[in-house]
Image (cartoon, rainbow, N blue to C red; front, side, top):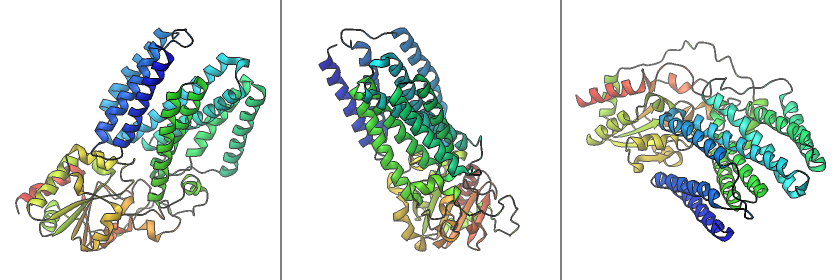
Amino acid sequence: MSRDLYDLIGLLAAVCFILALKGLSSPKSARRGNLIGALGATIATVIVFFYANNGQALNNQTLILAAIAFGVVVGVPAARKVQMTQMPQLVALFNGVGGGAAALVAIVEYLKLGESASTAVVVATVFTVIVGCISFSGSIVTFLKLQELMTTRPVVFPFGRQIIVLTLIGVVVSGGWVINSGSTTALLINGLLSLLFGVLFVLPVGGADVPIVISLLNAFTGLTVAASGYVLETTLLIVAGTLVGASGTILTRLMAEAMGRSLFGTLFGAFTAKASSDTNQVDTRPVKSGSAEDVAILLNYAQRAVIVPGFGLAVAQAQHTVRELADLLAAKGVEVAYGIHPVAGRMPGHMNVLLAEANVPYEQLVEMEEINPTFPQTDVVLVVGANDVVNPAAKTTPGCPIYGMPILDVALAANVVFLKRSMRPGFAGIENELLYEPKTTLLFGDAKDSLTKVVGALKKL
């Protein structure tokens, strides 16, 4: 295959990536966008086997095919079997693997070029190693937090900020050492320090803010791929990496705004946050609990009801049951809408995808800015497995992990019903004062079982 034909097909793959991003901008076209992106990635992978660089065919084809086969064997079952509740963890892992792979490729290419590497290539290699290693180790920590294999709370330690700054200085200095000397030892030290910085970078982030960090690390991976494309002299990698980096940066900024805080505050706010009270203390205040029949009666006589889905809905796989409840209410003349917080669940669009599985009409999904003004005219709000995104502490408790985050103002509704397994705090680890309000009714149990009982009781009315 000639260079011109290779570049032309590469341009086609790049166009597929652009169209994929366009499709992913809307739930209605997201599936098509995903398929177009997969087609572009397939094209970009296949054409490498037919391109002879300077007349030399691709080396180590057997090893490359074996690696691809291994990736398919591992990746396909993982992607097909993963539960929607675990999708953020999978995204974090895939993102980390991408950053680590780009760093390894840059190192191998650097060792291959040796002293013939130009200064620009060495600089690009160092950048790739630094950002790729940070993305890899940071993504592993986000996975551990989301999987709750480690504490979801911010991890702070004495002189934490100073240690992070010193590690960053070490990364920069060792990177300069590589550029000036070309030392392989310096490159190894630079990679190890970058891995350490990636861990220290994510540890202070609380569980509620982890989705923002995933998006930021995704942008890092994109920049890493773009830099490795420069090292490998592959325009397609530069285009693809730049697209990922740019879109990830925009998404990170939008998510930080949705959380009502600066990116710096998200990453390092734990070092300046005020100490909170002991969350291990058992709150003995009384709450008003009800039965499925009580909730059904409340919904039956409502004129407008809003359903607020959260991570608990995903855990219980209750999206189909909640759709059945909404359809039943609509048949009874009740106006129904879904209040969607930008960071509901544990990744952007999590709730939208989950509800799309149950064929919930997209028109019923109302974003936070649009739904909030309607809560004073709402008779019943049904909170299914959500907590932090409706917690008034975000407005009333300075120093708490979610303070300043815009929330769904469900407290303004006439009645609030919480479907909860227990009185355990939400992902941010703080109490929700709304649970103790007289207007609030708690329905304890698995969300799917509770909704099934409510649907059954509603059918009898």
